[in-house]
Image 1 (tube, rainbow, N blue to C red):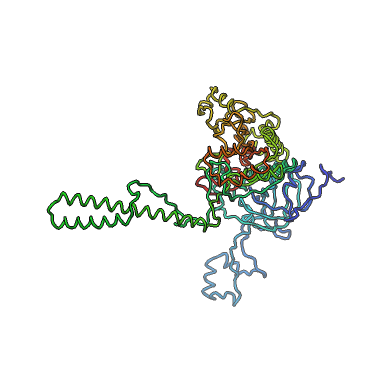
Image 2 (spheres, rainbow, N blue to C red):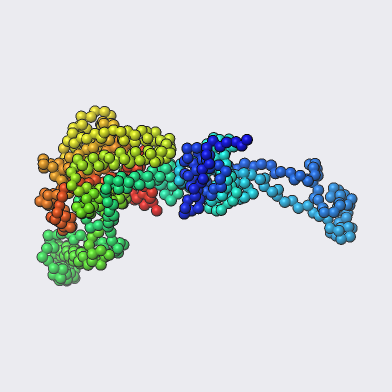
Length: 622
């Protein structure tokens, strides 16, 4: 009676575009892949670890048994007595060579034993291979007769193989294994140069090898979570009737009004572009360079006459000093003239640039998104945003991805509810679609990660005004609060202040709203008190601020007043003012710092570890 399989036979599905089976297809099944046993698979991946097991060579069935002393080389014909004597007794060999030379036995040549290295013992190589599709790896078994083990075993080696999936003889870490029948590809590794040969490398060291670090289990898991959150973001907004809009990376406008920006130019490195600010000196006002040079010539002649006469040394000293000052004034006027000329050249050079005006990498696409919200209703965008702030922080990078949202006919409360729903939707999506990766994160990175997501889904977010938050922080007396700077109304809440509210005070997500107008961008709607604006932040435990949003100012006169208060050039924002003049509407939106949300999800502490190729102050990772 045939043995029954514990699970039903499942036909394997090959990847359409690479003609191989993803390990996720096999190993993420509830039976651990047993349903695919005895099927032929083609798998490809990278070696995580390896082991070679030797076995003794089989003795041929027709081989005669020899003793340890039976070391004579065999000949095709019978061995003569002379050959035996000369091989066993050295003096006989010498006498024979004296008599016959090298041609022994009248032309019959003696076979000289050739010592060849023994053939390598046959072995079986056990490889642990991962293809990046899941956390789990597959054990791959290769016989030495198929390929040299030394080329397969180094960590990082890429293989593409064909074989039969078999049940593991002694189920443990691996329930199934692939017994290879054919080697299709081997991507070799230079072991001495490959950086991932160590068992475990710290995250800060891995950043130096951004092109290799996705091969580590930690970074691979983070990137799969990153991918799932990206898909979930689009799913959320598409399911709620939002339209996706692509926004420009290059802009002429600072959306916030007080951000450091990266300048975009095609004339970088050219000396003409280096602007020199003109120096102001009251002593040079109204004095021409030609006049000063003429005076210097006259005073130089006076000095020469005094030097020839040698009659009045005091007069000579005074004349020399006077000439020196005149020369200094001439140099100063000459430098000032060059500076003015340089500024005129710079104006010409801007027009010669790719763009005929100053352009920057965008800090935010919010202003551009508002124009589409005032035509299409509910819109969103995803993309990189750039800040040239010269700060070093574990939660800041020069290039970060933002999800930006704008909702027409919505007020502050509406957009807060949207942000609340989005955070809960993303948290739930990760737990449902990345459970294996989250289990790995929980085991290796942060034990509280899964619980934190579950708590975020079920908890009601605490809402507290800026004024109340300042009062709470002022009354705090625990040890953590002592390290925080005491605040008065009008001061900006730092990330440390906001994180303290979520981590220590409320111990759940917190929404802080109604900030002082001085701390928020110019286009945030002014509240009736004239001091605060309709802005909010969503702060997550161990994640900090992940969402910042606001209701936008739709009143034209108030918007102009706010721009004047902040000293913003009206001509730069004239296009934005147009949408307030023509058919304006109340609208609200927010920005989700996507990389920070990945940081919150995984429990990692540095944002550079969740960005594939991070850019930060003084560091560009390839």
